[in-house]
Image (cartoon, rainbow, N blue to C red; front, side, top):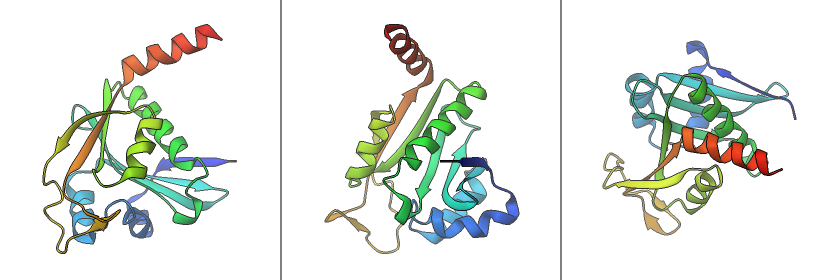
Length: 167
């Protein structure tokens, strides 16, 4: 499948906003994050159709994937893994030593997803989601804490090289 991932233009942000709300359900928090945290917003298109969006903060060490969203009807097709792989490659191109990403401790599917992408659990940001106006529930639990995953890019490169050598 032909995929195109590129940095979104400023005039495309409103088009990406509804999709990014899948990753950050608070519209006010998302707008604030786009203005104050994100250094870059990326879009993924498949055959000319918008299928994914992500935001990155490159200016900090470690760099951080802030939001990652794939259209609901396209989830399960491997697009998220391909988007993460592209962002990891971009981090390597930028000389980043590691990349982090966080998700709610109640997001079982996301927790499994990031581990399948090679990330390892690192730490918990307690009461991270304090800013939600109303309690958000996921899998029958109130969303409160964020589980942060880390991918050591040097170690990941060494593992990949070892696996390639074994083939």
